[in-house]
Each structure stands twice: as C-alpha cells, then as structure tokens.
Image (tube, rainbow, N blue to C red):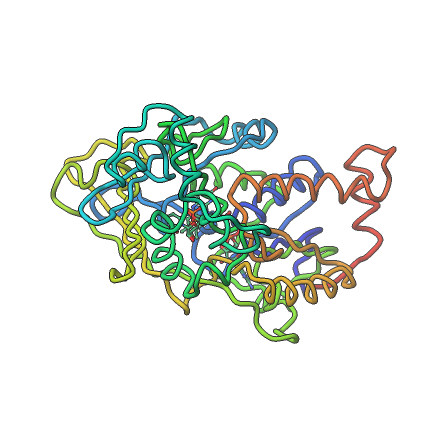
Length: 390
Ligand code: FAD
Ligand code: UDP
C-alpha cells in the first residue's frame, strides 16, 4: 500500500516550501514534503550553536527584495528585524567598502574625491573600452579598470568559482554594483530585513498547515516507490532527476567552518571579503551583526570554495547554459513534474527570486487550465489531468 497525497514536493528550501504552503493553504491539497537533509529551510537553515548563538549553517543569508508582493507574502509567517548589510574587503593592509564606492576609490588610490561627478570622471580615465560586455571580467574592467578589478574581483572570483572571470557570464560580477556615491550598503533594495526569530521558525510556520506532511532525511529516490501522488514539485538538481543522461551540470560548492570565539565582537561588519588569491577562504561572517543577538561570545563562519560537496551555485557559463537547456527541454516534455528553484532551474537566484518564481509558478499552474474558474477548482482540474505515481 502506498501513501496517497495530491502533491509530492522534493526539497524543503524556499522553492519547495512556498509551493507546499500555497498548495495546502490556498489550494486545499494534501502535500508531502521531503528533504534529504535532516532539516527544513534548505540553504537558509539557521540554528542555535553550542554556545547559544544563532548561526546560518550554510553561510550568511541576508533577505533583500524590491518586490512588495514577495515581502508581503513572507510577512505572513514572520516579523522582521530591520538590517542593512555592510561588507568590507581586506585589500593589502586596508579594509575597504564593497561594493566599490567613493570611499573605496578615494582610499585605494589615496585621493580625495568629494562628489559623484569627480568619481565618475576619475573612473572614466581608468575604465577600459569594451564594445560588447560578455564576461564577468568585461563588466568590471569596463566600469573601473584593471587596478580595482585585480584587487577586488579577480582573486575572489578565481577562488569562488575555480575559474577566471573571463570565462564566467557577466551576470556573476554584475551582482555587485559599482557606486559613485558613498552609500556603503551591500544591497540597495527597498526591503532589507532578517526574519526576527530566524529563518527556520519562518519555514516552520509556512509548513504548519495540517494538510502538509514533512519528512526530513528522506530522498526522492527513497520515497518515490512508497507514495502515490498526482504531481511532483522537484527543487533538487535537474540533472540528477534525469539521471545525468546528458552529463552532469556543474555546481560550485563551499565548505563552511564555524567557530565560536571568546570575545564580544570579532569584526566591524557582518561580512569581510578576502579577495587575496593566496588565502584559501573568500569571506568571514560574524553572525551577531546579522541576527542582532547580544551575547558575551561571538560565532563566525569561514567559507572555503570547493569543487566537491553539496551543490550551492549553478555555474553561469555559455557551455553550462547550453547543457541546461537540453535538460530544460526534457523537463518541458515530462508530464507530472514541475521544476523549481536554484537547482531545479539552474539559476543563480537569490531567496526573493526563488519565492517570486514559486508564487508565479503556483499562479500559472491554475491559470493555465481554467482562467475563469477559482484557483482551487482550476487546480483540481489541472492535477486531475495528469495523474502520476512518483
Ligand atoms: P535550496 O535551499 O538548495 O533547497 C533545495 C532543497 O532540496 C535542499 O534542502 C536539498 O537538500 C533538497 N534536495 C535536493 N535534492 C533532493 C532529493 N533528490 N531528495 C530530497 N531532497 C532533495 N540569497 C539571498 O537572497 N541573500 C543572501 O544573502 C544569500 N546568501 C547566500 C549564501 C550562500 C553561501 C549560498 C550558497 C546561497 C545564498 N543565497 C542568498 C541564495 C539562497 O540560498 C537561495 O536563493 C535559496 O536558498 C534557494 O532556495 P531553493 O529552494 O531553490 O534551494
Ligand atoms: N565578487 C568579487 N569580490 C567581492 C565580491 C564579489 O569578486 O568582493 C564577485 C565574485 O565572483 C562573487 C560574485 O561577485 O561570486 C557575486 O558576489 P555575491 O556577493 O553576490 O556572491 P554570493 O553572496 O552569491 O556568494
């Protein structure tokens, strides 16, 4: 006998959890959520460590978005702690603001620049003319020139990705703006905040509907034989779902080293970046800055990029995009499964983008079948069409 559910959701990260919540609370469906890791919340998982400090097990997760819809949706499940993230980079003996801004440029070159216009003119003299911006090297060289590129981006990127910025799509380093002002915030989004009690309690609230069953420490492969479902939402790696039939899609991994030190403050800001290619880690996070926690000690996390380990980052190159599009075509031709999330759609998405993708996918699922009917009824029609056994 198999357990029967309307939906099986594979992965309890943002993508899977938002879908499960919508399907249960809005659609009225029964949903089984499985995750092969021993906890919910995916890479956003946070927990109290042995010293009693709230830490992000998979590196610093700072929530930021310009989407009122996404922020309003998540606000149903958590209160927020306002937090504006700041990052410094250790360059030589100096700690300089990242993103590169007026202060960074003034201190790096030892000049006094006092207006946006002066910075613009200063950078225009150094920027390299590049007709077609294609790569992650082009993006930076075309804005700030070689000195800043080599000191802030080249070493960091080579460590983080195991390849040169000129081999990576422009979308990677484009994530970090170049500013002519003295704004030293890492993000400039309208909403910047942390879930007040942490991410994991927010996920618990989202998965709290009685129609949702959650099983952690269980993989898709293990569960699929034991359940009968009408539809699968799959948020794991898409190449793994299709048994790597076109070859593996590359993902970049990280090793996290968590430490607690017997001092109240370790560093001036939440994250310090280390672009120096000689150091094996890319950044150190001091969690108390992010969580607002008061404690006599403090916990920090080093990030060491790695070729092996859990898949954290899709690697944006033209060859990988081409390989992904073959898997995507296969996904489009496969009924009974919807692929979502950073791994399921091989996109370098932030948390808010994944939430937005899942909300849009839920809305589309129902609209596609019967735009004139209410979502719940339309949804039932949709999943009724392609009954699948996972
Ligand atoms: P995930 O969180 O990866 O969830 C997928 C889940 O599926 C995983 O828990 C996995 O165990 C499970 N799974 C996979 N395959 C299977 C299977 N076969 N069976 C069962 N379970 C399976 N975003 C921000 O907005 N701000 C930040 O500051 C930020 N910082 C980040 C820092 C780091 C170091 C990293 C790696 C990411 C960061 N992100 C940040 C991005 C953020 O983590 C992602 O956007 C988001 O977590 C993606 O959610 P997801 O549900 O798509 O994937
Ligand atoms: N980057 C860099 N130096 C920095 C910060 C970022 O070279 O000081 C590059 C690097 O390639 C990194 C990318 O910009 O992977 C995106 O940075 P982001 O902080 O968005 O990375 P994430 O938080 O996703 O790891």
